[in-house]
Amino acid sequence: MLTLFFIIIFLAELIITSWIVSGLRKADAIVCEMSLQVTKSREELKEKLNKTKAVINLAKLSLDYLITFVKEKKTNFEHFFKKNLLTTILFLILRIPEKKITRYIDIFVILKQAYNKIFAK
Image (cartoon, rainbow, N blue to C red):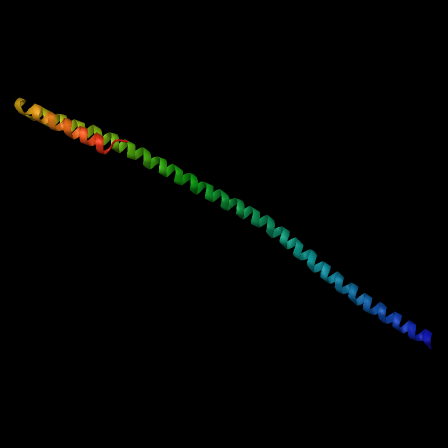
């Protein structure tokens, strides 16, 4: 009778062990499947991150080019404005009668000195 008891317990242990092993195999299959999904999504995320970095770098370069362009236009405008101002002043001087020229030249020199003091770099 004791032998029959041990045999029944042994069979119960075998059934429980097989049930646990089958559960572990199912869990292992699920974990392997999730690992594949993570690996695939990691590659996709790396690719999307690299594309995002490229877009950000392109935007930064575009902004740098825009800033350079604006600075060039600003210096061109300043140069153009100075030329036009000088030309206008020369035309005004040439239209003035000879007696008043020296007075206007003095005023021009004073204005130039004031300009240099105000806008000196």
